[in-house]
Amino acid sequence: MMFVRRRFLKIAGAALVLPATVRITDAQPSQGAPKLMQLLKADLTRQNQTVQETVVNLLEIAPGVSAPWHMHPGAQEIVFVLDGALIVEVEGEAPKQVDAGAVALIPAEIPHLVRNEGAQAPAKALVTHSRADKEKAFVVNLKRSP
Image (cartoon, rainbow, N blue to C red; front, side, top):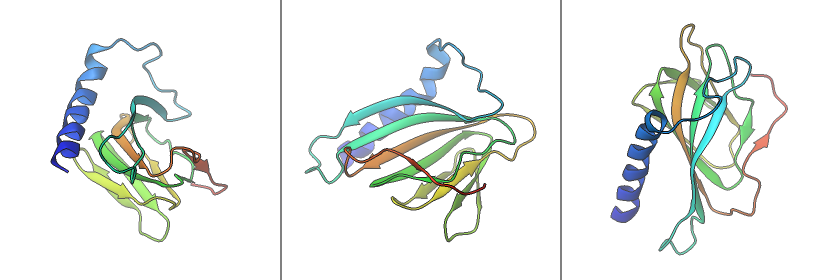
């Protein structure tokens, strides 16, 4: 467990440094859609395959923009807000504001969305998925309005 925690902290630290050190084309998010940049996708080792894969992404959402309602089959999601604030809606729960430095945990198989209600700046978050079965679809978009 300590190995996994140390590895996650190293990855999270690298994710904070990468945007400043790596030149990315089209770095400005579109005003009409969130921009998601995958930072890591790696098989876990020494976990007896209870979690087959961890996927880490950097999410940028422009002001007034929402991700669609969706879910992740067999994948728990952790949203760590780096800049700004996000509203996280999880089916069956009240919407929750997650400010910079805070975390939201979203269970597998549960419909949810995130949105940026801020009027000024994009929100950025480190999004980590721990997948029990990497053969399943990563994300399933659902037909709902935000």
